[in-house]
Length: 161
Image (tube, rainbow, N blue to C red; front, side, top):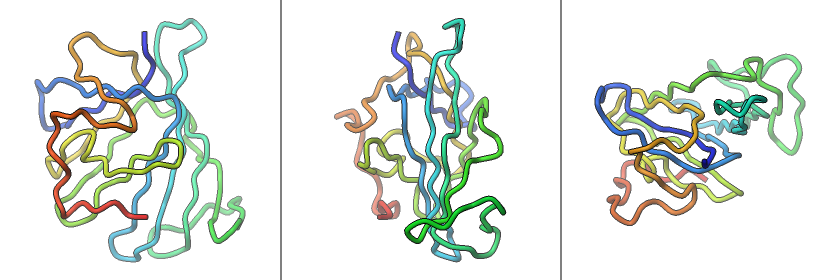
């Protein structure tokens, strides 16, 4: 079984999850008002008994300090980034708010980033990201090569570099 994450739109009750085979990834975004970049690194591992997948928050960094983006007191300034270890290290899922009025999250693997909309379309609501094994019936994507049958991301979701 492949290890990865399952993405679903919270508002789509009967939608098939999108499975992305990945063991390490970075979620990145830019604060909509302050225009400050934020990045969080995650790992996906099998539990000790091998029965479930687990998500681990490995490291986070923010490019500056601004409204609602103050780095924790233990953050270290390195090369212009405040780096720290997240407090919640094993979340069961991430609930990602996506909006028509801001740039989409960047999904990064091995230093290559693309808009999250390349993996799963946005409904301008919450996207759930859960660690998982490849589920029967899920739509499978490569973490760096979106499915050929997926439409390109809309222009309003440019990748923020």
